[in-house]
Length: 296
Length: 287
Image (cartoon, rainbow over all chains, first blue to last red; front, side, top):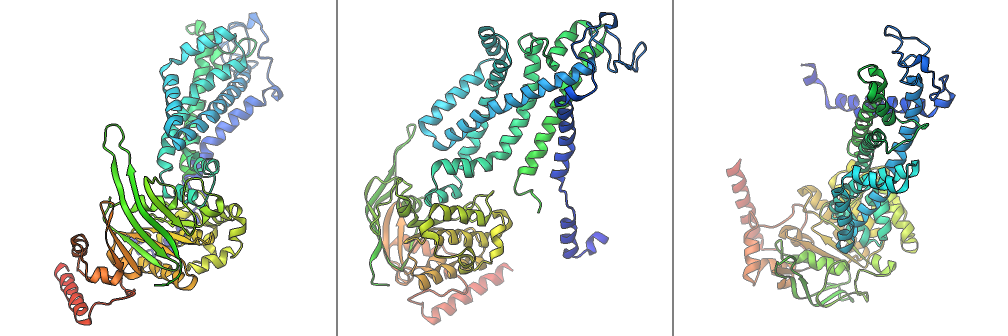
């Protein structure tokens, strides 16, 4: 009943008083843990961790500290070579994040620009770009990755290039579709009519309006890239020892799965948690980016 | 109206959209002659698909032309006009919110136009420009979704005015607005013509709107002009069966915007009383 008697003025005041909107709150809720994980991984050399590659065979396959036989000197246990799992997780996260981010950017930039170009220019430009996208999407990723890595050897730049190759087509396809509908909006015609140059319409007006979808796609792609990198490392095509990534840890741990589950399960959990957080973060960003949902 | 020079001169314009994927080519505009004098508001009326929008796009220089000629005060509109000539022909669209970039504040949008057309836009400050279209300076910081449809349409008109166009195309500028706002926008356009001598080509399907602002009117059907002349004469004594049918299709029969009077050739008082009574009667029935 009290809700019914409230005057319009109190409604207005109520909605204005709620400072952080729901969108902002969830961006922080998912962004903060993600930022924490990234920060810990990137600051790994400064943390009091044991050398992730130091092998102590006598200490091999020690369980995590809270289990019987565990020891707080290696809180998350050790792997088959007696290396500290916690230390390896943190150092592995470092490379995983770097690869995910560079792979995402390397795929997003050409993908978004080509999608924008195809959607805005249409005609033969669109035909060429669209056929390229379809060709890319028709190729099985692992096959392409194996071919490229077999031909060029395993290295970080090659790995990032392979991961970018997976991503760009997705961006191009989504951005092209959005651009096709956006360019028909009267404001684009209005800008053309005012003599605004084409490149400025594309980069200054269409791109900001696509930023929401691009960001969501980029975060989702980051999740995919973490998984793809893990898959490649699992297959022995990714990161090479002594470099560590979560996928490589997963691959090494699988042989001990019946004896020492923690060696494979912990990096698996880390991958799952980060991919999930990244996806939720992307969703939260999308609602934040929608200008109609922005609060002032 | 004003016996001045001709601003827009369209001669024997035809526009054929080529057929795609087996569909036959369609003729959107078929030999249209049209002219607009300086300081005139000229209406183009017709139903959807009559070629109004194709005509507007061609005049803007951003649409296809197949044959014939268009001349806007010495400029031949085309896709690659020099910046200064491009600014001479401006347009106001039907969808007020759609005509503004949703992510650009009104002020930033005006600044962008000023940067692009430095010499042309120095004549007025943002505040004066907005007050000329009946807005206050606080809309400058707003995003398009934070202002009403009527305000957005005023902003669109202000953006066009800023470039000092010799010809303003208005493509159904009031169709997406409610009736009271419609009247305000129409009064604004009329005022701009009266005070600044703005020349307007006014495209609409709404006879009431056309009657209240246009000096002359062209009636289009299937890409041809079937009737043209002074608004009052054409709408009071339509000669062509299509114009008669259009008028008969207006509910209530009396196509007028409340608060705005037709510029010429008023209907006899008796007839108007009769019409308004019949309108009251209809309203009573539905209530």
